[in-house]
Amino acid sequence: MIADRIDPAAVPPHHRSNASVFIADAAVTLRRALVARHGLERGCEAAAEAVAWAWEHLDDLETMANPIGYLYRVAQSSLRRGYRIDRLRVDLLPDGVIHDAHHVDHDLFDALRRLTPDQRVAVVMVHMYGFTYRDVAGLVGTSEAAVTNYVHRGMTRLRTLLDRKDLS
Amino acid sequence: MTELEARLADSADTLDAAIEVRLARPGAPTRGQLRDPSRRVVTTAAVIVLVVGAAVPLVKIVSDRDDSSPGAVGADSSTTTTTSLAPAPPTISSTIAPTTVPAVGEPIDISGPLAFGSSSSDVTTVQQRLSDLGFFVGPVDGEFGNLTQMAVWAFEKLVMQVPRDDATGVVTDEMWQFMQQPMQIQPRRRNTAGESTPNHTEVYLPEQVVVFYQNDQPVLISHMSSGTGGEWKEEVTIDVGEYGNEGGTAPIVRGEIGVSVTPGGVYSFDRMIEGVRQSALGGMWNPAYFNYGIAIHGALNVPLEPASHGCIRVPMKVGELFHQFVAIGDQVFVWDGVKEPEVYGDQLPIFNRIDPDYVAPTTTTAPASTTLTVADTTG
Image 1 (cartoon, each protein chain N blue to C red):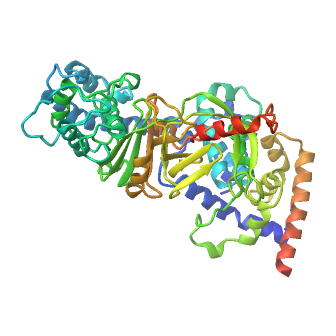
Image 2 (image 1 turned 180 degrees about the vertical axis):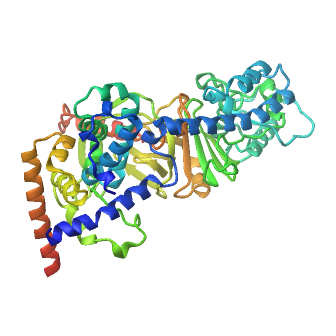
Image 3 (image 1 turned 180 degrees about the horizontal axis):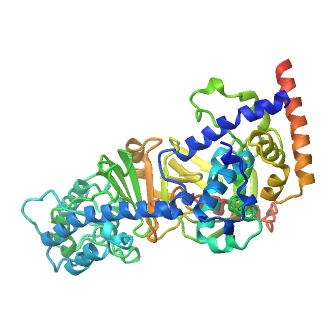
């Protein structure tokens, strides 16, 4: 689990002995971030697109300062081709995916769905998976200050949504 | 750590588990996984097994066939197939393999070429033979009508390997002799080999033929018409309650641009609608969706060439029938003639976008153009 939380972007691929290790790590991170942003189905699809691209462009990745950030953008572009589906509802946990459902914090996942996509990625990556603000900024291609904002506002909104839930 | 932070951290495993479930979902692996070189080895190995398996019946047909028969796969080509295929992926034609099993008694002759409009006992014989092979001919009544013609097209394209533009729909004596040979249409993916669900559908885009299989037996073979591959720009009408106008009170009319492509890949049916469905691009009969807006459905106009917006059009009568052979979850394999479907996995279609230059027609010109567009645009 801890190993999974190491941002592969922190270690440039040319320092790694094996590109497949980099891509395997990147795939885990990309999947989590993209699922947070687009929901389970499309997030996994987009991550697969980015990983496919990565295998075909290993040489290009070697020269990049922030390869995982680039792969994230590749994934985003792959979804943009089908922009109409962006309007579908974002489902991080579609019904029936997890069988042992009573352990699932449904209220939390419901509330997450109501954040903006940027807030959701930031909150999930920082507070669910323990990424640093800097890691997330590199991944989604924005500044640390912006990520701080997304997390702050996202957490505030989550608290409001969950409090309201408790009262009702 | 606040309570909310703790809840978030505790839910990490849930989300990871959901991702794992999604990745392990039965059906085609995602494209990214397929291109991973370590998996590519596995894929290639599977392909070799498949080809070796397919090569045996191929050789058998050649020995059964009269070399002069039209469209016969020559002995040379199939020998090279068996020997040269190991390192490279199989060509599409090599796996078509209409192989032979049942014999048809004494060969008989027909009096002359049979074509659309013919009406005789010979037509009945041909219809019965096509029907026995699994082709949909409509009623076996001795009348050579539209459905019989489409069945002949499908036979020419699928079995005789006639390029789709050259299909004639005319049963010559030569074709009839060929048709009488013992043969059976076999699936390219077999449930018995664990390659497909028990009932599955195979769509061959180059041949424009769709085959519905149950337990590896062809139960319905039909001519079809898929996406043209071109870009379209049309006025669409989205009725109330349809996707894009779920909460509206009046139909939305707007310009959209899309690409009429039926992508190759491995899918499964996820939505089936009984009866007519009026989609934004026109009416469909009994659509069975397998890739977002792409469905197999009955249509009035099913020409020889690809003509749809991306859907698989089949004749209306086939549209009425095929639901009994398919169910939600059954796999659909779409061959595009370039790569094997598994290489693509569940490839997304190209989604429509709104036409930025669309200008709503004025009331004076609207009726003529609107009616024409809507009536003509079966998904």
